[in-house]
Length: 229
Image 1 (cartoon, rainbow, N blue to C red):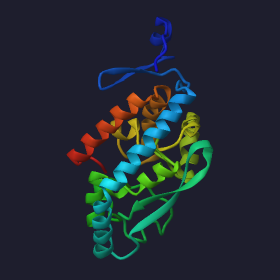
Image 2 (spheres, rainbow, N blue to C red):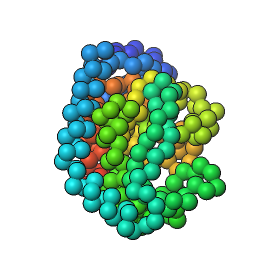
Image 3 (cartoon, helix red, strand yellow):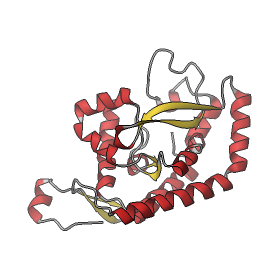
Image 4 (cartoon, rainbow, N blue to C red):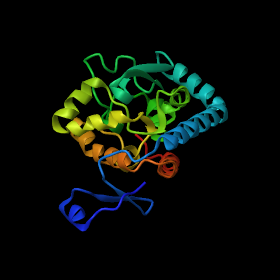
């Protein structure tokens, strides 16, 4: 949903224009979705996640077998993240790293050169197969199909030092994908997280089912092109 702005605000940068699929998006610093639109977004999440789990059930089985047989450790891993309202929840993924990946403490992935990632884990990340267990979390309501990427408190504490506005993202549920993810990608440093933040804030100001569908389409294109990390 978009609101009119005067020329002065646009020129001074108080309101910033961006675009997704050639549709302008406007920074207006507040959520514009109505309660019924949030209800529709939740229904959309339930339907899409349920259909995805049914269609991908053979993929779940195949990936689980490959993960288990190609490296030692559990098939899934869980990690505490921060969700809506600043409340912690556990996120589940297919394990893409060796089991001792964080024996020296929390550390962001350094992309293709990260030695902690297993060979099959590298492939999973390229096409985002490691994240498909999160459809279940969307279905139960911990996450949404589209929303800001959930982060760990360890990194959030560092982000807010540079960008206190990060806490605005806790107004909504985190998502499996986001405008920040498709526009910027995975962040390898806290500084990159701060850069990606502007895209997630832009989404916050322009939330709608139409925007979600466009971001999902964009995400699917990235997956088929193997441009995930």
